[in-house]
Amino acid sequence: MISIKKFTFNQVQENTFIAYDETRECVIIDAGCYFPHERQELDAFISKQQLKPVKLINTHCHFDHIMGVTYCRTKYQIDFEAHESEVPLIEQASEHGDLYGIPMEPVDAPDSFFQEGDQITFGNSRLQVIEAPGHSPGGVVFYNPDQKILFAGDVLFYGSIGRTDLPGGSFERLVGNIKTKLITLPEETVVYCGHGPETTIGFEKKNNPFLT
Image 1 (cartoon, rainbow, N blue to C red):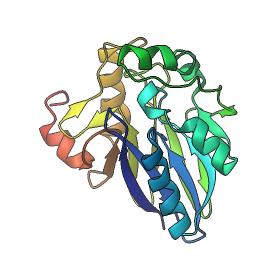
Image 2: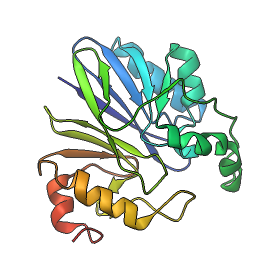
Image 3: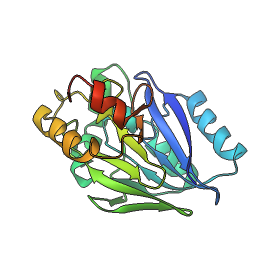
Image 4: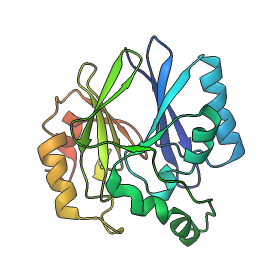
């Protein structure tokens, strides 16, 4: 059974998640830890729970979601995986950080890429990769159908959706993907968002002004 720990990191208040199961293997999703104390907080949880990170996966690669990638990659000697269409964002991350007054070191390209239908495995658990671009060119979400858990990145928020005015963004594409791929999931599915609080598919289906 998957357990989830949420951290809210960096100046942009980005949500980083650790998903783990009874084997103690875990994946780090959207590593955004920027400040030393944030990295210490992440490490302390992993150590206390006796977890073994096996993968570093990203829903998308805007700079605030990859601030901790190099640190986690080095600290835990694990591969960084993302969608191939996100590579330009990784290459421009330092430049984008500067635009927000947040200096950051360049991030190396992913070790491997995933695409629609792939399975992210750790321990006894699996997350399905669902492509949902529109907020970013290669944005994905990770879904576990057994527990009805969705890691939505910046695709879907509580009462809102991801912004689409950034490079590679498309409002029509994003809303189309949400309506055809996310809102069709079971209503009780819990959505873990890249910023802000959790929500459910059922709540968004009924109340999200971008979808109703």
